[in-house]
Amino acid sequence: MSRNILIAPSILSADFANLKDEIKKVEKAGADWIHIDVMDGHFVPNITIGPQVVQSLRKETSITFDVHLMIENPQKFIDSFAQAGADYITIHYEACENNLDEVINKIKSHNKKTGISIKPKTPVNVLTPLLNKIDLVLIMSVEPGFGGQKYIETSTEKIRQLRTISPEKLIIEVDGGINQNTAGLAVNAGADVLVAGAYIYGAKDTKQAINSLKIV
Image 1 (cartoon, rainbow, N blue to C red):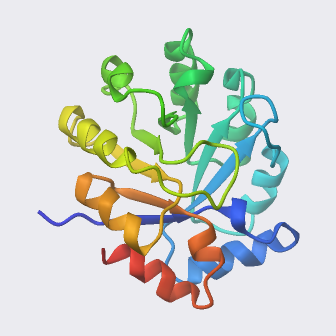
Image 2: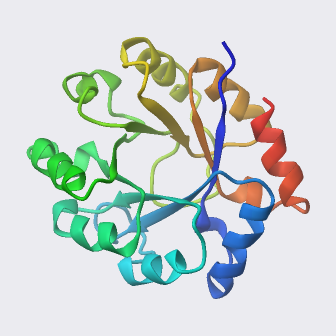
């Protein structure tokens, strides 16, 4: 059965001085979602944007906002990002493994789609008790924190394992080192959504770059 593969350009690789135009550019070129990486300098060694930027961008487009919280204590910020206009809110298993149900319920209370992400060294089976409670799992195929890294080959088997144990409706998203070559590995293993930053925003032809991921 063929699947509709969704492409989510990551604005981590965009020109931050022109975010509105950068989003409109990829939207016009065929992007399905916009992936927004939120980093706090603690959970990952980098700092990016907060809810106010998301709120400002929300006024400029109706495209799906896929907000990835790479932060400690995400429960403190769920309300802010939900109110700012996030459509999907994804938290990290490693950031709140002791209160995951609480954080999941908080996201759901805002009627937002709920995602959980795992780092490359975290095994898929830790998610088994949660798969019926969430909408999306984000497999990090690089160590989170910086764009432009190389795809970790063992991610492919993690995607395949997750697809085997997950409910049919669960969305599997992959983020890190995605390009025309690695996209095929992820999709063939069972991925539904491909996050790509440097590959799309660094391309001379944005539409061609997005299309090259859709047809793998």
